[in-house]
Length: 371
Image (cartoon, rainbow, N blue to C red; front, side, top):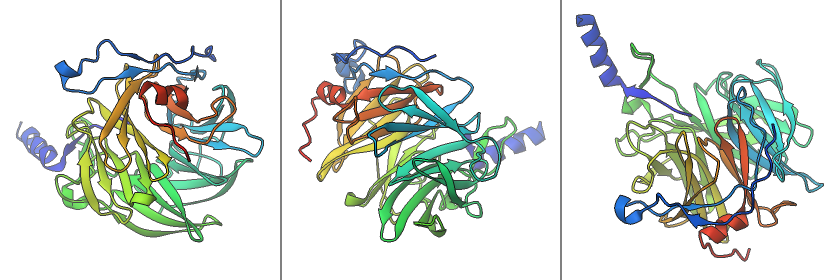
């Protein structure tokens, strides 16, 4: 998502002034090397290493691919689900090869239909999809992808991303809501004033039968903690932490940290992020691990890793090809082709690439996880 908006006060001033006047072949194995352009001494930024993609899917420009989620079935097959915003459907890829397996859904507001699907998430044997223009979250049962219910339309305004985790009797689900205060004379979104940014994230309790109730909404209204541009969100229940990408390019490239109850904690990342933050995922290793984050540029993308607990920067890598990434997904459990896990990333709104986690870990000299 690329958001461009102006503060409400600036918009009002402007208004007053106007009134006055094909499947690609697999990539070669990863051979991490330092990117020549990376010069930490000169730029003050960390060095970036290159890791070759293990595969690239077919490119489908009409789809406008945005977000990813992976699931492994009982036969050991790994499926990667991608939201196709412009064609109002899901694309299902093979997680070991990138081959397109099928598409799901059509445009509409009925069960199994979509209006601009964006965020997607898998938990247990359920797939959840945020639909921006139907203003709802829709669930599907796996492996059959039968519609299992939907909720949220009476509370959501402009929903984008989601994250969820199991709780007793069901799940807690967090949805980012990028509601705006209208448009200015140039058609740019107007950001609401800070005191109206207190419902930027909606939290639902979802039962096993997909019935849902709103537990509340939150968002800090101070200048530092306010959520101006929201889409990507991910949580770490063990550390009572939510990470939310601040996608307001006019403010800062950074991540906001909240606790699971919705209280603002801190901000980080602006010292290393040169581009707009997008996708977020988490690699867990006992109580340790790494946050994997995305700094998006049209011609490239840099994936930054931060320590799970301290949030200190650990390292950064790029692919040979992947660029303009929105959604990412870490498949930490091994697959047939990737016994130590795979990392998937959207490529240029048209498809996805897959990385072997072993190549990433080797390139960044990450310790092996004993869990």
